[in-house]
Image (cartoon, one colour):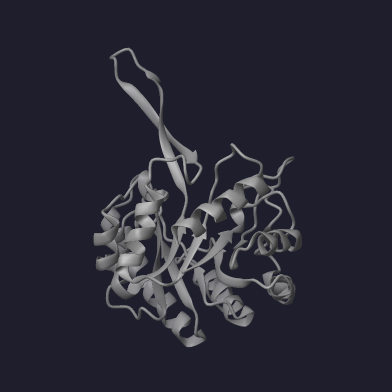
Length: 279
């Protein structure tokens, strides 16, 4: 297994110094974040992230993305895109850009269920959309990935398998995400890996916690979830990596540590050291 970092977790530096930092620390690769983000006074994971490539004008940035990545001696483990499967024009752009970049895979997101909508109907439409995604990805020689993510129709491995079952696993696959599953969709990872089979294409690792926010007048405790260091959250990262080994997974593990206890450089170095120790 090889280790990469999703640049959403590295908001402080521009792409070139980010790549240089990852190379100096000993990471194998990088998963570039691509989206048109909100501006912010200070860099953050989701807004003002300096290591994010804009979706607008992406085609004009491909040579620079490749130059920066190659100069650092890194591989591109994947593209962290945010285009939704319902946006066929946007999907076409992301798949084509991924192919031109020479990257192997790109995330194509799925919707959640909005008030007044039916899960079954949203799911059926997304299934049709992902059939389109699979056809185009196969033609372009790249792989489109569904991420297990809370708040979407594929919060669990079971749901993602149901969405993709019967489509070409060379063209579409699943990102199994340990941290997201703490908040919705948790299933025994060993069973989930077995269920996904050839659709297990990529892995994201982060950790999180549930924190009490107070008790209401009825004596009921309310909770919220948040992110934690790889070592400090609820999930057993060591057991998770062991499960991947037992399954025979030999792909990328991409770190997505959104904790804020440590400065970025120190946080990333510790993440890499910990993950290396588990491998």
